[in-house]
Length: 289
Ligand code: NDP
Image (cartoon, rainbow, N blue to C red; front, top):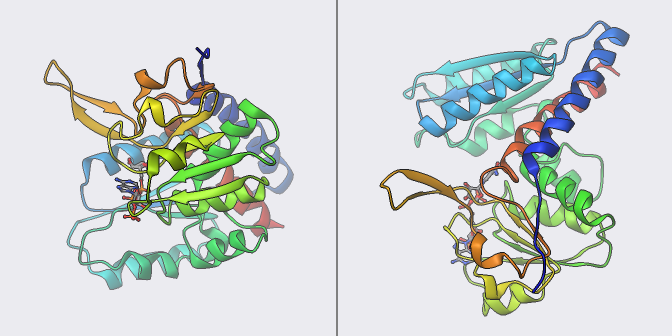
């Protein structure tokens, strides 16, 4: 039986945001420029609205300017593209984030491709994805960045470790695999067509669930002592009829097997906004020189 350590992403993110606040203050004092983050929300997806509100609050708390553009769900794609171009040209805006998902009539790739890569603080533009893949400086996606920070804080060097990432989306799985390669892990990306997924997962020193299926990764898929990062956020009905959040990993089953694990909520989730703020400061530094 292994003693399973809880990886407290909430506390880590709070410390990170406090440090960022000091760094932003120093940047403003040195340059006279306040970093600005513009968030574009199209439509009324309730989860997105909560997320955008939290982003705005935490951006302001870090001493940066938060600019929110809330557009109705039936906004034409051309109008969204025109707004993004205006934000690209605005010197007070150093980071642009278009909240996904977008309504079905809007081509998300076309919108992401219009964002100036220098202001692409979500790291979803193909230029940033490509730069990350070839090992150049890039604005990397926030959730994967947060995962790697928690892993390094838990394990120190990740070099040589077997990492299995379950999920291959462009926003989590693929960039996370690139970041782990950069840390010299031996990386496997698993997905819905992977054969013997439990067996693949059992090889992992670092096991990452980024699937979006409640508690799909079972306790006996985890190698004893492995570090488990649970990116999944799934809403399920509890016994009392109320919704509760669970991850992609069966958290209770992982106790006594995993060496360390992130809880849901309070693990990876809080790291995403903290890394968004860090990317905004990085983008501002590069733009201001
Ligand atoms: P996507 O739906 O875009 O991707 C899911 C991935 O999981 C796909 O690659 C898919 O494989 C794979 N998958 C689906 N079913 C299986 C299966 N049965 N076995 C193995 N692999 C499977 O999701 P995202 O990457 O956007 O998000 C993943 C999870 O992370 C979600 O719960 C989401 O809510 C959460 N999330 C959390 C964030 C945070 O801040 N903590 C931020 C972003 C996401 P295939 O490609 O073959 O279809």
